[in-house]
Length: 88
Image (cartoon, rainbow, N blue to C red; front, side):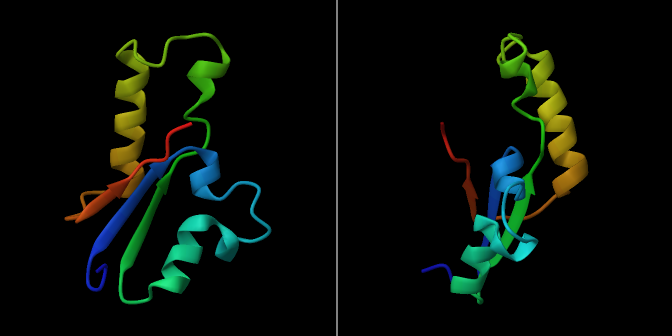
C-alpha cells in the first residue's frame, strides 16, 4: 500500500522525462496520476550516463561523487519510504 508514502525515482534523462511528449507524460508523473495519495519525487538527472558513453568507468569514485552531489542539489533531503532506481 503506497497511500501516504514518499517514493523517490533516481535515474538519468529518461527518468527526468526527456523524450516524453510533455512533462506530465514522464513515467514518474504517470505514477503520480495513478496513485494520487502517494508523493512521487522525480530525481532524474540528465547526462548522468555521460561517463559510460565516454568510456570513463562509472564506478571510479569521481563519477559517483558527481552524481551524488548533483542528486543532493537536485533532490534535497527527503524523508522517503521507497527509492526506485531502474537498472539497464
